[in-house]
Image (cartoon, rainbow, N blue to C red; front, side):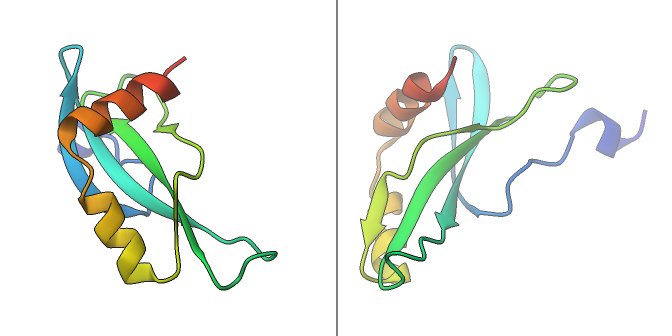
Length: 96
């Protein structure tokens, strides 16, 4: 089996923020920006979680928009300030 078959590519083109563990699994956390034509002067972002050991057909889990800042840099700083325990709690809230 080749490496790409063992490790499917994440379904996010966002900015990698962290890798956390939750219930015995590792999850890569990405920050994804969302355009809002009603508010072009703000940077709105959500968190996308992708399991490191994703099974067949398993998809990323996303939060709703949780970061709204006036600049890209402020949004990135806000996201990077989240601690692992906060990232884990947000993952728990987004899981089915």
